[in-house]
Length: 263
Image (tube, rainbow, N blue to C red; front, side, top):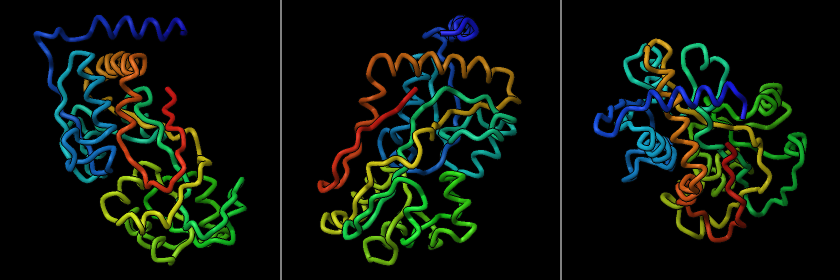
């Protein structure tokens, strides 16, 4: 570990609140089951990780559910102590301190099992109709090919609509986070419908890290992120992080893909 990282960890330890004086933090978030949602007792896998990491760092967390865009905008102004959880973008670092990686999302291609999908590069997807959600990040390479017309895209409002189009044969492929797809299929489709689909084992990217973000406008934000990172490291080291990630069940017909969450 670099000397600068050791110094940061030492500083965070000194700044940890004592158990008897545990501080409460108000974190803005949004709906993205199974990672963040009011429909689960634990409020979602990613939020469970955020909560437990802060608990190990001596903080208590209250999550407030808002539309994602509002959660981001209001957190920038310092109305909330932070917001979780977000993919890494350079623009975020202008207004926030970002934590270490909370979860590495598994972006894969969900496809109809009647298709013999064997893809290595995005060029291999040219024959297929692809459900695309306009507000999603995906990867820069995929968006470039969609915008240029090299890939045949079908504008779709959300992941649930994309899965319905797949089940009904209206599209061939939908790029989607694997655990999100499994959760939606389990809650909205019967087993026979879910088993019409497959998740390709090849990840679209292995670099889709996600983060707690705390606003630079608040004077305590940097120390809180450092403290959070210590708690998060404890979760990784103890194996609890892996256990929290293993709560989603995918369709029985899907061959399992190793669930990774690189630090």
